[in-house]
Image 1 (spheres, helix red, strand yellow):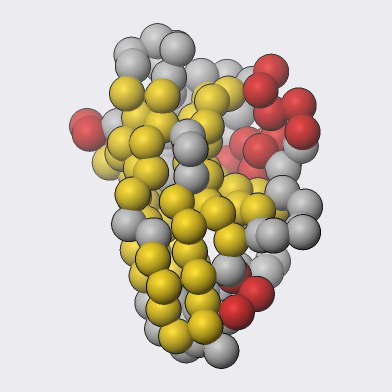
Image 2 (cartoon, one colour):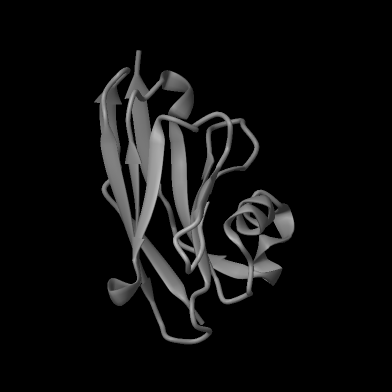
Amino acid sequence: ALQPVESGGGSVQAGGSLKISCEVFGTTPMVYSMGWFRQGEGKEREAIAAIDRDGVTSYAESVKGRFTISRDKSKNSLYLQMNVLEPGDTGRYFCAATGWSMNAAEALDAMGREDWRKYGFWGQGTQVTVAP
């Protein structure tokens, strides 16, 4: 099994930036696509960014142009650079990884579904709080 472990969350003022990271432990299944989803208090899960093994990315409209996802395959690590943060970005951010052969758009769609557990793994999450 894969075990993603997130780090780097915190509090920031609106308009500020934050970078969160994730390291995936375990070697099987081999990681194909990775991504981030978030959940704010009282809100539904929202998949926000995904990246496949070829480096192709996919983003939710809510973060496009502000967030950048990247990965280091040699370290089995994933990153999310978040700029121009808004109070609506507040929530717990989860790193997800799958061994299924999904492209970035497919992974983004799957991570947003409640049945994601059929396809991949996720960590405990890291809290991001954006103050007005």
